[in-house]
Image: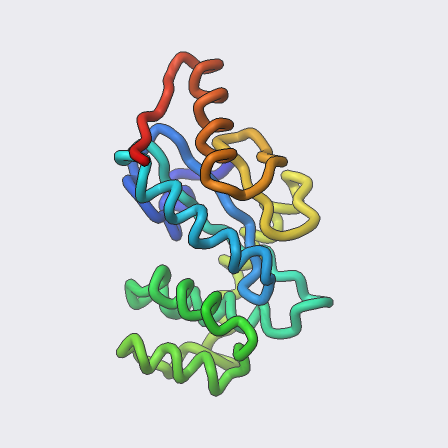
Length: 180
């Protein structure tokens, strides 16, 4: 799906986990906001067997602030705060104007100078790369989830995801352990 350096960008969980869940998401999408805690719980309860890789897929037409939020998350990532910013963006997805993004960065004690406007544009290539990857994989909406190389079409619920990961693992001869 991607090269090694790109594969570890925006990963939540153990980098060497045998199962990678890739999520293509939009910070202004309410369904993505609902999926975020479920996907984190999947990783948190997997005993280092599952990792989550976040990828940007801003839906420009229905979500006018999705791209600026994605750029701000990339600026936060450069400062080691992608996941804290990710959480704030989804928590406050109804307030993603530039002044809001700067306020969230300040809450995280980040340098806000590269977060919005022209300075943030240098992060556009990363978002374009995610978007192109998604398009090449046939992604049309958000959230779109892949379990390894396989598209996941079920409900984004903890039990359903665990069951599908178990099925995939049995097919491949490896079954991830999970708690609770």
